[in-house]
Length: 311
Image (tube, rainbow, N blue to C red):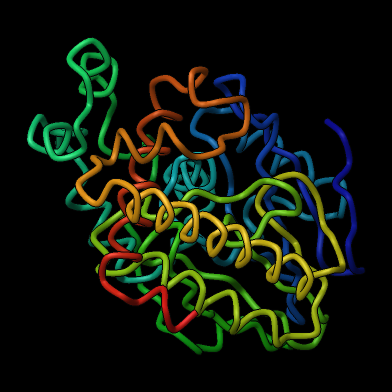
């Protein structure tokens, strides 16, 4: 097993492979407290490999699974929290997440994915519906129901250090970042990634995920922190990246607004086809197509509501 990467003397990074051919890894973090206990942030994808890698990383820093005191989840997606149930079984440590993630997780089990009525509302052509209707509701395989929930601004029970939960909705309704005030690092999950633009509205109901996300970006941009994200790698330019992500969504809103000015009754599908997508509109399929349509629907609602004007 490869040794973990030490970000600080008591903050260690473990790369957990991701199945599916997208991003190669999710990033799990191990925090040591003043009593020698370990707090795990986002243990990664379901299956035995994640727990084995975390076990190996712990041994590399002179710890073991029995030293794990808590399992902290930024959000409910299985590439971040899918190993939470297995790690809890191996360590006895409690799983903690935001209450909105708990509620969305409870609602997602046994739920269908996209419904025909949604595809009707979006104006999806008949020949593209089967692939969308086959998608699951949320990627939450292996995610454990939490033993306790965290609230915005709550200081975590980590002896000897001040780590605060920050509610940063947008990617999901209950997404959390964890602000390690003493070490000067912010664990950003999928709220902020160094090069990838995180999708929004990917878990649980939200009235205005675009506005929520922009507000949360503004909040964390004010922090003087090194960003420790859930994918890719750590980066120092937190405020600059927040500004880039905000501009990405505002630019998309302006594009949607321009289309609606020419075609006020355009469907979500018709609007999405006019936008610029990484890899091109024609290449989108399955989950990426569903995400693109969902993002477009949110931006269309953001523009039509008038909320975009304030930004």
